[in-house]
Amino acid sequence: MYFYSILFQFKNKTLKHYYFFLVFLLFNSCQYFEKQVPSEKELLQKELKSINWKEVDEYPSFVDCDKLDNKTKRQRCFFEYLTELIQQKLSSDTLSILYPELDTIEVKVTIFPNAKMQFEPQFPKDSVAYDTIKIDSILHARLIDFPKVNPAIKRGIPVKTQFILPVILKVE
Image 1 (cartoon, rainbow, N blue to C red):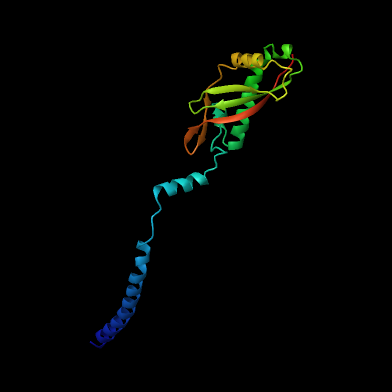
Image 2 (tube, rainbow, N blue to C red; image 1 turned 60 degrees about the horizontal axis):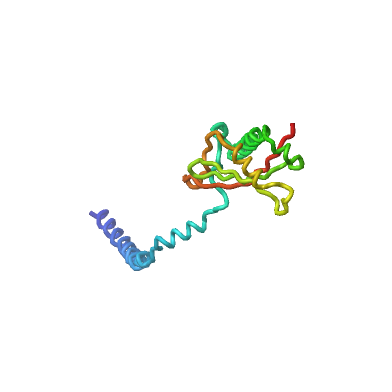
C-alpha cells in the first residue's frame, strides 16, 4: 500500500506540471489557426516568377540522340545532327554557285510543340549583295522531309523553341 501512495503522489505532481504545459500550448496554438492561407493567384504568380523561361528542361532531340544519357551530350548531338542534315540538303544546291562569297548562312530554326520545324534565313542588315527572297525560297524548297524531332520539354509539357544555327555551305 505504501508503494501505491508514493506512486499516486508522484502521478499528481507530474500531472500538475503537464497540465500547465498543456494550457500553455493551448493558448499558443490559436496563433497557428489565424494565419492567412495564400490565394491561388498569389501562389501561381510566385511559381511563375520562379520559373526560368529562358531554358528548357529537355532540349529538342532526334530519335538517335535520345539514347544518350547526359543532357549536354543529347543537346550537342541534336545540334550537330541538325547542322549536318541542313548542310547535306543544301550541298546539292545552287547557292554556292549563285553566291560564291556566301560561305555561311545563319538559319533560325523553330521547333513547335507538335514537332513541326520551320526554317528562316537570317541575313545581316547590310545584305544588299544577296537576293534574300531567292535564298529564302531555295532554303524553303530544300529544307523539307526531316526525320521526326521530339520537341523541347519544360515541366513535362512540349514547348516551342527557337535558335539560330550557323550553316556552313560547302563548295564542292
